[in-house]
Image (cartoon, rainbow, N blue to C red):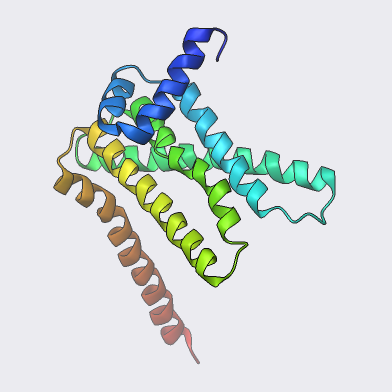
Length: 193
């Protein structure tokens, strides 16, 4: 994956570009997909998040298992997420960009690397903890904006269409959930003796 110096440099340039010049970097990554590099970002962020939440009283084997499960869970979530967006893209006749979306959505997680230092702020007094929370929300927003850019770049959408692309699944899920609950509520009323 990173057998030579050029690939390592390319990976670090992709990380740097994602943080500071995402539009240009995502355009390059769309043309030259780097799914293995994006996989490294996904696994690293998944493991980092688990490390930040590990309870020191659990044993080494349990902690190692948690880290392994975090990596596997992160990969499965990433693949499911990309597959789901490919399905939504097919509704808009824009599917067929799975490798590009995997690459861009993986790199869109890059700002989460800042969560480790941000966690240190949460150990201080109330004002410093509040600052840590604000920084955490800023990282979340940054990553969300990068995800929107990833959708725009991958599927060649305008900002408005990208927002519709992202909102439609949530609205459909909400409607489906309400229909599901209503269906069984009505069925329960019919079967009530």
